[in-house]
Length: 278
Length: 256
Image 1: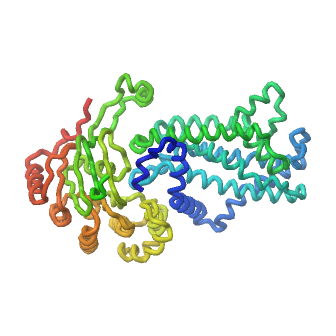
Image 2: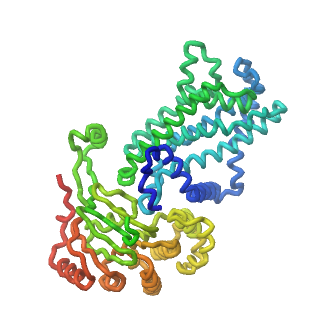
């Protein structure tokens, strides 16, 4: 574990660094994620089934509501099949972001007992939080596909391409987690700011609408929110059965890598003082 | 990098920053290069020593002298404000009570996590678990949440884990004294054996323990090395000094 303290001496070591720390500590990440799950469902009769029930209830409710009382016919639905699917496909990446963003400012403080007492590579906390959130997203996604099959009768084959969107999205999320984890340990205010702006995020992101619904002068700005790109790309692949726009995909990658490296660099820069502060 | 050296500390200093106002922390981050917005508390200053592979070192000093901070720096848990530390080998830290245990989890689960944190594979730890449980000797408690443990049980498990991770350097922070005599004997036997291949860094207030287990003793006084040498020389000097000094608060002054 000691070589971890000396970071890459090769000229582009910093590019690989955030990946290699995650890989080197994969065993640790796995054990801790397993522990968190075991702990979460311990002492409940249904155990992990609760993780399935949550999203199942939510999607069922959407389906009932948008089939009956609020039948919506908007351009957004073109090729989507059902408005409930349309929302739910957006909620999966949105909630992934939401959970990580909400948790990030307190990440170091929650694990302070661990960071202060053992030789713990603190940047793996980001990977751990991501893996945990990804598992819930995965469960929701399976439910989405099941409903899609039930409601429309088919699942577009482009679903198989989803990993190519997921990878850059996860890198972006990790960068955000590292950035806010570092900032949040320095002051508690960050956690409050995050909780205050979070409810706004859902309206600023195309969850209940589609970017194509946004009137033209504003539409180009809608993509300034990187979440919007990823939400629309998820819908393309999982519901519409179309390939994402290549320019948007490339821009998404670029933004993600900037977040990823920037967030990690920021975290590592302040890492040494963070342990003393929390 | 000489592989013969286990620990090399060169001019290590550590200060904690105290801020009077909350906002000063931000001012420091932004304008730090122009002005200082905090007061320093120097926990350690100019600590330099080396330990060869297989050499065991004891650290002695009064409360607040900086012993635990030094161990934390050597473990890499916290970084020095100035100076350099180099450790060549796998560390197993038995740091003061509650060695990074999650008290909601059972001893078994904590042992697995603890072992992986220290660099073992999960499968290896599971393989060695029988031996860990036998060393800890806490019976059925191994499968109970650790919030039900006594202080002694905590320490037993912590030591048992650290004894099974193929460490080359064991760092022990005053925790031996928590165990009962039977367990202390067991630990001492283990450490005596361990010394043949690895190094020990031991913080203790017990003269007997230090002279039994260490080749050299470092006496830290108010963050500086006051004496370093054979246990037989340093420990009596320290004990004399403690008898003469008053036990007042002057040693915990935060400088302006």
